[in-house]
Image 1 (tube, helix red, strand yellow):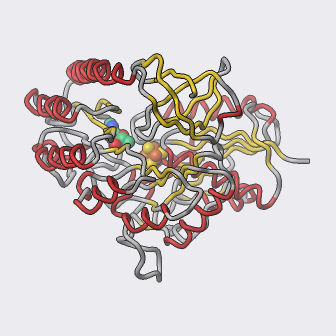
Image 2 (cartoon, helix red, strand yellow):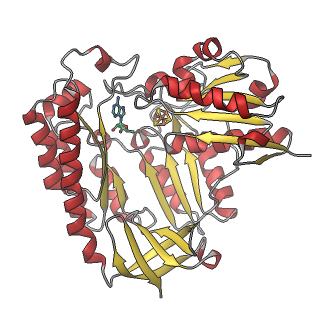
Image 3 (cartoon, helix red, strand yellow):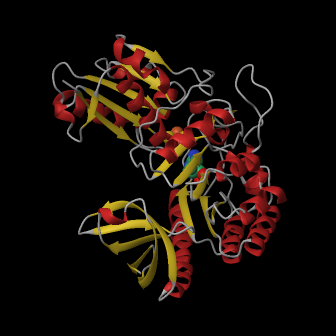
Length: 433
Ligand code: 5AD
Ligand code: SF4
């Protein structure tokens, strides 16, 4: 009889893919069916994130809850980024946890499950030549890792300590994984890496040569049945002309670009060690709007990084006015262990941070309210990928706007023209033509 697996995935798309990989690996050896009910599970996995501070206590109270309600012989494992940085401390604080597996070590899941008190959080482990499993939670949109780890040393970021140095996955593995995903029904690929447009700079042990990111995009686009390619996250520093031109000219590349700004102030960007200035960012965004005017630009912004003055924050607001991002993910700075910024003493008061975040979000809402009404009566091409409650099928435009229509399975995995009848702030409602 198949075993039951409960897996909780926190954090980013990379974690989603790591969870899929663990599910595929486990199923190579014996069958595991997914369950949403942890009390009937034979195996419980928490795949954690540590990018912003979530009280570590919350993780331990969650572990305690699972331990109390799990089947007596069920195993419980903590994986992912928080596992990477807490390591052995997890066993010390929660001795009934069976294994701890870092974000860079998820391909060892079978060994972890079969070894008492298995711990591996080695961030130098090279998983780049390891073929990722073919299990996908959403078969219509295939997540594919193209690199692991990150070489940038942004002063606020814990990821280099949880996922290790950047290594590109050999393009042969990526291309064959992409072909398999497309054969299995995916019309869209979502390429993943901490720094995708730096792809190809360093390959795993013994490998030489290869493709750069734009060449990889062009190769993938040759797959006939593949209709759309997305990727995240590119780094503004590596947005050279060649990259922007390939992005603009290849029709299979979705016109949605993530440009993580972090701050609009050149002084703060320097302190953050981002490697670009306000002017460079603005010039790249301007070039992108010029050569691919139908592109939606999204961004990540951190407010109240240590030392951020009112003037620095005004620079961030100025970039928002100039670029008019279609989507902003905004966060209050959160000091993370092991990062240089955590040692900086010029922290910004929490009330000031909250006020800045609120002002930024309010302005962005106004900008969206200026952008989305223009979609009324427009016809957009939507790739349907998900069923929602109340007989609704949801998909996305090339620009990554969510579109909802009345309908069901008949639309899943299909690209359809949709007339927008009710554009709201973050969802466009419409009718399939
Ligand atoms: N504090 C707040 N936000 C952070 N991010 C990363 N580290 C921190 C931190 N210490 C944000 C960045 C990044 C996104 C994934 O999370 O904006 O792009
Ligand atoms: Fe993803 Fe970063 Fe969270 Fe790790 S810490 S799961 S890389 S967002």
